[in-house]
Image (cartoon, rainbow, N blue to C red; front, side, top):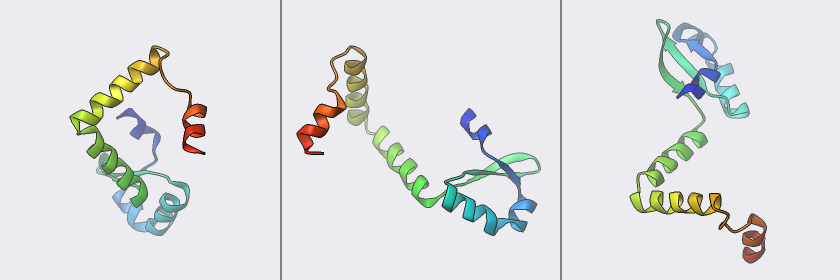
Length: 94
């Protein structure tokens, strides 16, 4: 939640005035822009690609089986039982 504070904040009036520039920044730089109305955040402008990634992550994390597997894998890594990336890549031929 606090990461959103690192993004630029733009009021609705400025958004209307600079929409083309802001859209270019989002598209080219991957920037996210917090849109405010009367000084309060009301929306977030982000690229479609990033939005789709966030939606996919939410879908995956809402699957209890996937989340349990992920937490178990993190535990294994912390305990030193993980497989080094180099081995995984070599096994996959990458």
